[in-house]
Image (tube, rainbow, N blue to C red; front, side):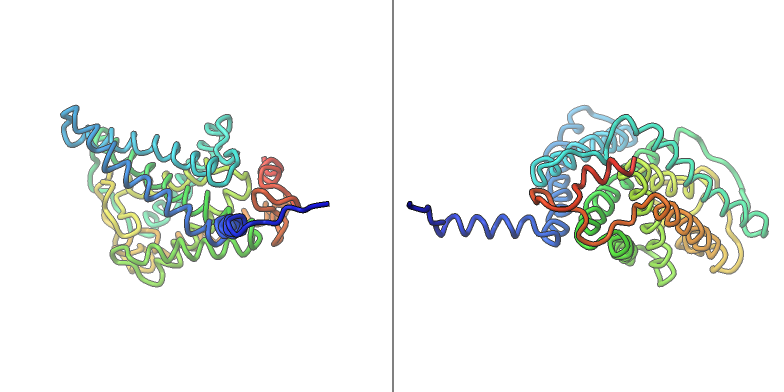
Amino acid sequence: MSTIQPTDTDRQRSRLSRFFSYPLTRIVLEPALFLGIMVVLKLTVIKPGLGLFGFDESSFRAWQGLLTIILMFAVYIAIMRIYERRGVPELLLKKLIPDGVMGGLLAVIMVSAVFAMLYLFGSYRILSTGSVEAMIVPAIWVFLLATMEEFMFRGIVYRLLEQWLGTIAALLLSAAFFGLVHLGNEHANAISILSASLGGLCMGTLYSLTGRLWIPIFFHASWNFTQAIFGSTVSGTELFGTYFESVREGPEWLTGGPFGVENSILTIGLLFIVIAFLLLRMKQKNLIIPRGMMKRPGSRKGQSESDANYLRT
């Protein structure tokens, strides 16, 4: 009986296949692909295409944001289907509204609670109000940036780390990475990194509880937008505009200083409480996955990712 021996080409293809399916490769390559494709689309499709319509600056930014959001979803789904050869249960459409409302309300309540406490301490005053229309473009771009970060940090980095190293390690590593990314923001310091890391940890647990991205996306967007509404800088930036013209007075550890209320001890303390509650819920629902339980695409052992996401619903 004759056997077919693998050729050098077959061996090379096998090595390449293993390389591109290795978790660390995918953690690096998939976000790079996502960002790279979006930059190319921005330069070749979005800006040139919208430029044909002669929009004023405000309308151009609004349509640019909306078109970018649509293309981001398309690019993310394409990467998952082509590279990972899987569906996207993390974007289950029938859960969009309930998850979105839940994530959005949680963020609004948390941020509003921080400003309410600052007001009670005499450290926050509203001077005047702006217009609702002026917040439309900022709202679009807040949602755009939140979606982009959630696709990369929770949809790709955290999800792949969880498959590779288990839930706890994935939560801690992805949260630390998320915090370090904010190091380049204006007025950032060690407290800012801690605060951003806790935010990443909170959104990681929100993703883990459902296996879907809608709650962290809407939580992230509402978290940033509510800060902007109350007149605070957001992670050291003032990209979004504000609705209330306000003043925060008092020690930086209380008000957050120029970085924004995310640096306040009130925000950090509240994040600790919410994260502890979410981790307890994960433990109660048996959602803390040990290392090696979730298989990589194409493997035969362990629990499949789609099964794990189904069990979370």
